[in-house]
Image 1 (cartoon, rainbow, N blue to C red):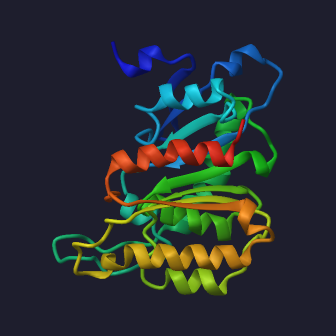
Image 2: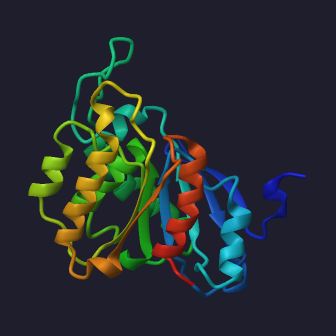
Length: 252
């Protein structure tokens, strides 16, 4: 018996303009046929929720979190689509980062989200729409925070690659919607074995949090930043704190 066989909601694999997307609908979707639901778009497909849906649903039953639609968007070129501008590779064996983030966010706004809206009952209120991801997926989600602030008002930022060259300066200098809401996580063991720019993983996330905190209207209510003393840059930690982030962004 698989974990997904125990869930009460439904999972579908769809394709939008040759891009694969995993859609999770909570059981309330069928029970409330006239209700539009909040949604979160997550980068790198369904890895942040596919094995934790039983716990996500448990939080909904307990009233800790609200039922929402989860959409996992796949990318075959994450190093290009999840980066805001070009940057040299971190090592000779890797290709450079292409910096196609603007084009990717345009695809989300003008192709992916309209397709989902056509086929599923999602809320049209930006306060009911979130975007998020881990690592580079978190980086592009913070970029969306600045570039698509009328489209999304909530952000899930897990171990975001804020070491990316010039990104902290971008966060500091660009305007930000002061009413948005964000959940951030970083592990205390991330980047400690790196010798390249990734060694600044923890420091850059702390600085990024401080920047966001200063730009928000009521930061103590709008942003939560959590850490894990044993947290490494691995999926198991991303998944655990994604569950916690969903409860903060969409409380029951």
